[in-house]
Figure 1 (cartoon, each protein chain N blue to C red):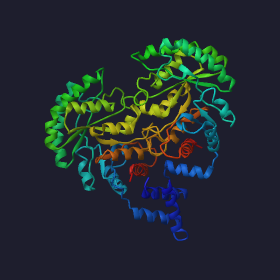
Figure 2 (cartoon, one colour):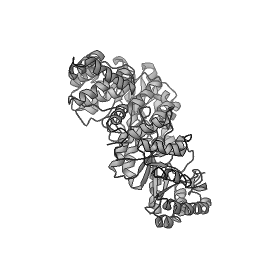
Figure 3 (cartoon, one colour):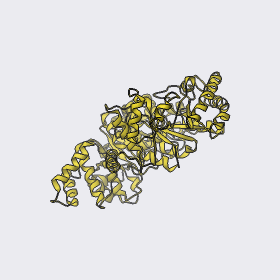
Figure 4 (cartoon, rainbow over the protein chains, first blue to last red):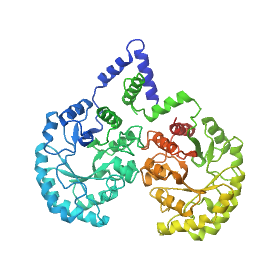
Length: 289
Length: 298
C-alpha cells in the first residue's frame, strides 16, 4: 500500500503542471510498454471470443502481449503462426467432453484420433493436447480411473516419441458439466500416478475447481507436479475475473508462479463487457511481478 | 504488490477518474481509498463483529476500547462472565457461547449420548443470553466417529428439537457452525452447507440456523457466493478468514471479500459478519481494522 501511495505521490509530484493526466498515462504505457512482466505466460481460449475472426483476434492478442491462443485445431494453427503466436493447448482430437477415456468402448477411436494428431502437433512445434475423462454414467471413481489409465497408457509411447503431453481438463460437474468424471483434483492426480508418464498431466481450471472443491491455492501447492496448464474464469458466472466475483486472482497467480510453473495461464472467461478491453484487463490482473 | 504494478494500477485508476477508462481497483487501493474517504466511520451496510479468541493476548477491556475506535459493534464468542465487560463499552455480542459441553466442537448434538448434558447446558445459558439482550448462541454438530451423514443429521434434530421450545420462548437462535473437516477440524460432521441446510429443514424452526464460515467453507467446498445465494435463508451469521492460512483477508490470499460481502447484503442479510482471522502481522489491531475496512462495502 505504501508503494501505491508513494507511486501516486511521485507521479503527482513529477507531473504537476507539466503533463496532462492523459499524457501521463500515455507516457507510462509507452515507458512500461505493452509488454507484460514475463512471470506468467499468457494465453487465451478462442471460443470465448467467437464473434471475432481469428485473424483479427490474433492481432488484438499481440497488442495486449498475449503469446498464445488456444483450444484451436490444425486448420487454425497457420493463422497463429502468421502472427508469431503459439498454441499453448491445442485441440483437434478426441470424442468431446462427455465421451472420453473412462469408457473402454471409446478407446480404439480415441487412440486412433490422438495417434493421428501427435505428428501434426510435433510438426507445428506444439507440445500439448487437451483430452477429457468423459461422463460417469453410473461408473465408480475407481473403475473410471482404471479405465482411463488403460486407454491413456496405449498412447504414452507415441506421445513420448512425439514430445506431446496429453492434458486432461478438470471441470466442475455441479454447474457446467453435470456427470463429468474428472471433477476433483485428487482424482486427476491419482490418474496421473496410474498412467505413470510425464506425458500425461492435468489442466487445473481455477473457475471449475473453485466451484467444485474450493481451496484453490492449497490444492495447487499440493498437486502442482501433476498440473501442466491453468485456466481462469470469474466465480460464480464465468465472466471477468475482476472485482465482480469472489476470487482474488493475483494471489492465485503468485502461488502458481511460486510452484515453479513455466507453462501458460489461459484466460477462459466469457466477457460481459467489450471483449478485448475485458481480455486486456484480465491479463493484467494475472500479470504479477 | 510491486512498484511497477502499483504505478500502473494507480495511473489507471487516476485515468479512470478522468472518465477515459475504467479499471477495477485492487484490495489495497480500495482500502486506501475508503480509509481516506471515511476515516474511522464505517458505511453501515455490514454490521461488524470480531471473535475475541484471535486476539487472545489483549485484555478484553482494552480490546473493547480498540474495537470501538475501529467502529466494530460487537465482540463475539464470549461467555456470560465476559458480557458485562463489553456492555460497559456499549458493544453487543453478536454470537455468544455457553459453557462446558455446549461449546465443545468435537462432541455435539450428533451423538445422543451428549443430549442430556447439552440440553441442560443450553437450558441454563439461554435465559442468560436473553437477559443480556442477546439473541443467538453458538452450537456444534460434533465429530462423525464413523456415523453416517443421515444418522448424524437425525440425531442432531432429535437433540436440538428438545431445545426449540425454550429457544422460542426466549427468542434465542441456536446457530450451528459449519467448519472444514479437511484442515482444521478433522472428522467434524457439519462440514457441508447442504447438510446444515437439510438439518435446518428437519428441525423446522426459525430458532435453529447456520453459521456460514467463509474461510472454512472455501476450504471445504468452494463456490462461496453461489452457495450463499442458494442457502442464505438458513444462515444467521458469517465468519471471515484468509484462504489458505486463516490470516488477514487482504491481497495475500485467494478470496475477494468485497464481492462476497456484496453478495451477502444482496440476500437481504441484516445480521453480523464476524472477523475470525489470526493476524499474521505484528500490529494485530491494524490487521483487524484492515479486515473490517475490506468488508465494509458501500
